[in-house]
Image (cartoon, rainbow, N blue to C red; front, top):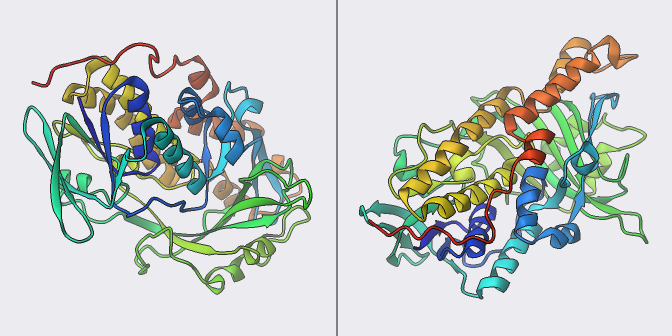
Length: 427
């Protein structure tokens, strides 16, 4: 059996590592000529960290990331609303990590190369579409010079991101990703950590929001760490913005004036923004949930399947979990259309709910509630919102996203790591 994987991002490489771990042959095709570290910071929930640990990457995660200790919400005036522990401090058996996306990406690539060999990913080839032949699937590929070729395999996995060509073939009338009116500016800055030194904070409300968390350890000599930050403003959805592109550099004058008043004794937001080496602009987009991911011997994973607003710290983690669930399906059913169906039946309902929830009631929605009730100013938060209401909102989102403490801690391991994969014949 051979699994064809279109896309060498976090999703595709996690699946490739999983296939290697369970003894399933695979081929990965990536459109860029050479994979390089891109993006800024991301968070990995304990549910995803557990899977990376099972892939044997525990020590490497500690080398590239920070174990997030807590998550706090603050008004635009810097007043404290709510803080909750994260990772092991919250009772999980696994930590939560804040890492640079590019470093995680390169960790997966380097580990795959070490385990499989230097030719484990074919770069420079874009997946253009596929044909289901009944007993196999044929992937159509094209390089940057226009040369075309095909590859045949037992199943095809579209891990080619929010602009997936595989998804486009399955849903030819879908159109472009959906922009709801929010624009993000993202950057990293060398600065002194705040609060516990491993705290993630959200400040303001949906129309004026600042998020920050460290993604490196504090330097013992300088006291500085790399702080990942996100500035968020809302606009009318009808306004025109450039297409989303994590690599488009931004101008500070487009957004910094709105954040000038966010100067607190524990964090100087405009100073952090000004000290960034580079700032990237990104209109926040997602896609409507699909009624189906799987067409015969082809299916989708990661952003190709369920691109969501990045407000719940579960984007990259969901892709990693997709990879592991696909691996389990291959163990149970071989590299077959049945395996793809079983994977979809488990993952599509959960991720579809997250996509829709992140649009209206993500974990930071409570910021909007407080802003609406008091304009971000109060003598005591208890006069604005009760502790029970705050706790219930946090609990409800974790339940929807599938990463409550009980759910993660009590679930059995996704893969049977010492059992062979089912050798189901192609038919």
